[in-house]
Length: 370
Image (cartoon, one colour):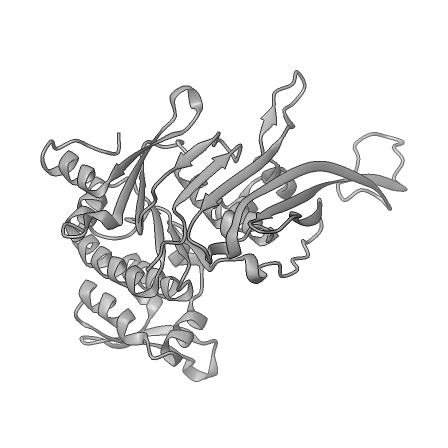
């Protein structure tokens, strides 16, 4: 099956400057120290897969726990764009550019998307949301800050670029018209804490209706043979939640189980929801015991191949890298590693194909994360 992306170039997105990932594989592992751009690459892939969709940008902000930040939502979006240092404060300068290549049919031949951020403001009637401390200040109106986002997609064979514009206003909810349409590729991100905060009842119901639940169960039973079934139930007419039929204890809510089972179930369900697209997993080893990594990776690789899904995953775990290499020992051409480092603060990526990864680990014993 053809890969979704063969190359990816990211320019001026967060801390990434002209970063190139060439010769991508079915399974792509991103390793390296903290603050070298691994998570930013996942965000860039998600945005490129939905080049005109504002949700892709807002999802990236929310996933970094923006709602718990003291900074305004618009300010958090602003920091996804390049800045120029000034004596008073940094200001946005330039635009984000993300390019990719792949076989005909991917993205309806979208080859590049750009995003531009422009601060705007308007005068609103009434007192400001935050009362002024200045005595005698005019409270009949106030200046409301905002931002305008302009997205452009370059489509092969089209003379003109496709353009979408959005306006965001501080203190107001964001209207999200559906812009996924024919330009979008199925894509989903699983963060290191997604299994604790994201409900998946709907996904499990869809998998069950599609008669694919046996594949989900095969993964869960590999992690714990006592798991007999997984169900969506509404006990006593309450909200429907996921339950697990456990050999030694009967039917229990999923919340009764540890993070490992919950995370494995989430990954399996999300994978099925992006058939023919891209799955992004941040900290793939999160919540999983080292003894479970081999079972998860074996299932994950086979399922990605069957469902034609391309995987991008970050990891800080050497055990996770070793488990993936061992699982793919007979098909090393499907796995590619990218070591991220940031000399002088600018992330760079060094490609390592599966064979090189295997030799570095099993022949030389090198720690490929450093």
